[in-house]
Image 1: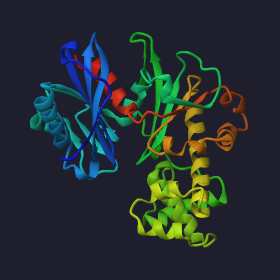
Image 2: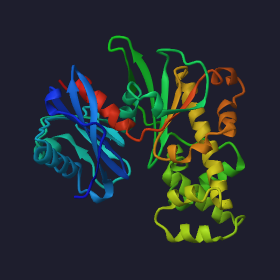
Image 3: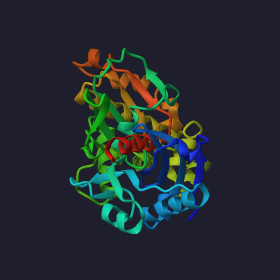
Image 4: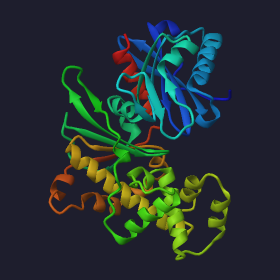
Length: 352
């Protein structure tokens, strides 16, 4: 099985008491990270990156990495923490991966790998734990405001899906802990004629009478839905860019690539940006996130310019709470390994 390996630090295995495997499992990519454990702290050493659709299951990737570590580094690992893009059962034994045709079963992993301890958490729960250890260079400030220490934090992010977590400071562990949430699947609140038309378009496209969720307009698939909706209106010309997109299987990436050159792509990103700002505002108000609003996910770092003055203006637009929203700093997480860092942090914290 092919993987891309990256090393972040040269190390001597004797420097650590043990090692931990962490994972960030999504519908598009699966990343596994190796952490050295010393004094109950996890140090990020290397990562391995796979294409999720090309994997038969998670154990295939785990065995590939553990085989490499055994043969090339003489390292054995028995503990792992995996952040999964999907819903975790209350007992933590099974994860339904939202946008993938295979799931993650803790018992199955224990049987098919040499791991003896496994912790399954939600992928945005992992990013939430990662906020405890991300460095200043890993974060870009979208809007400055005075951050209140130990106040609630909100982490959101659009990628293959849409995630959200509220973080509450735990004075006993002296770290932020995430609260479970599936807010990305909340109903999308259409307030304008165009938004209602978009909702009805998505329902027709997916042949459903069910309510349309935020994720269906604020994710990679959501961006493609918006683009398709605009094309159907007949208000935008067919161009060499739209022809290329129509022939492609990777619409979100090309819509992003041509958002400055093509009017349809530009308009799609305009709607996408407005929805992102509204979702961020709703989540920020729901938590009173004076500790900050952090934006993660695969789309945001690649399209940093959408977090502009208009984004901030829409974020602050509220008939009563504008003064509250103006007091909340907004950050963009640039480090694509934030989920891995958080899974490593959680693994070191909970797997003894």
